[in-house]
Length: 148
Length: 298
Image (cartoon, each protein chain N blue to C red):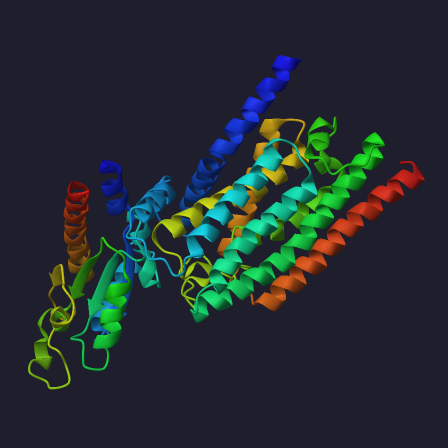
């Protein structure tokens, strides 16, 4: 069953959702996905379909309008999955702290595995975050194999 | 002689078993070559296998109870079509078996309310509509060529394999008409209207949208088998020598990749116009040329 964990680590398909970000972090994510950095050499594919994704990249603090969509997307991703909150807003709400219309961080709505701080998070940090998330994915995968 | 036949059968059986693996390797080579054409490193050649193994281990999300059956059907009928090719059976039967495989995919796409999947299904139907007549015409031109060469008209692939001169020399235009067919079948630009492996996300994932986990893995396996089948069909154009046939198929595969990387996606109307007009005229010109050659006695 070690093959399964290897395969999972070698093909993380990424879904990117902007829940109210200023687009600074989104631009950095897209920069990390461009051919210049060539994320495909690690098997990373930017997929638009939650049903086929493994990694959920989130930016922005999430607000009352889009928390339903966020929950829906999270529930549509099959296990095992990891969630990465990218940017200060997604981690804690940052400058939107105590704003009545925002939730102050995506972890108020769904469980988050990895936090990548920064305003905006730099591509190097994002790549570091994805590497951390893959370690978590391996842990989850091994746990799942033990329970079976 | 009896031993020889059994060895041939064994080779055919092995080919059928390894067809999805050959297709998967071709997909890996495709991703690597595409990356190199875009001056990237690209994923490892085994990447498609990692993807499928991963998908197999995902939590199953089934959109409807019919969906897994149809996913199995897509893979099964593609494999059956490949078996028809490997055992040298009827060409028309092969084309119709591929059509049934495709229909499984289309019905599965229509089997959910997702608008992306529905539009993807419609477009898959249109792409089927554009390449099936060309495939049948290609079979007809091979049929006529067999008639002219051996005096015995036949749709059997075994007869093509038994020919002493390669098909390509008498049917070069039919061979060219196979290029758009292959582009549509591999879901490559400019005709990747129904779904594509690239990040063209206007339809999310087109016909594949509602598949996930092991059903998507089955659909991927079916797609690989279909690519292996189409390239196997193309290699019939030099059936006298297996290695030259394989090289010919790979050359066509490479041409498709070059076209994929140099053209943007066209809309479905252009797809039907291009494949029908170009395909019909190329193959008809080829048949008329053969008849003229026979009449004039050149």
